[in-house]
Length: 155
Image: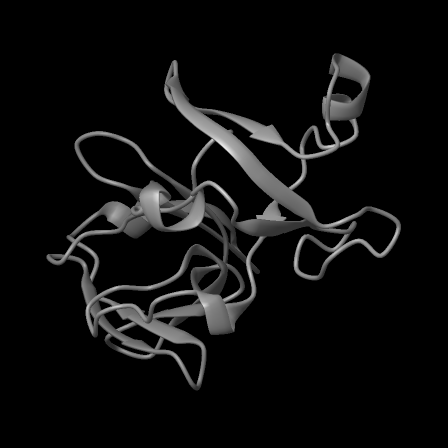
């Protein structure tokens, strides 16, 4: 598993249930069964997870490239300064001056700073996702305001 959580110990616990996502990556795939976690151990840069009913490679292949979803009522709420990955995707991004840049299509966890891939009418931009650049996030309006350093938007 490639992890999209800062708290894998809360999600991938023995007995936990997860739902393979459908083509939209946001809702469970009704054609696939709910998965119950049987075992978990670190593996490379992620986890090796055993699921009830998935006993061989071909069974595991049906889960390849799918998100695994957990019902929100089973997830601990995030802190005020935290966001869920799915909340970031699709957010509109604009500058402090009100210039619309587009919407977030991906978040890359890079060093020294995470980057937002923002696509808009003038093309694609990689924006540092840091406290120095990010001015505000409005979850309800699904909008991010940034204050880019000089020259960033010219790249």
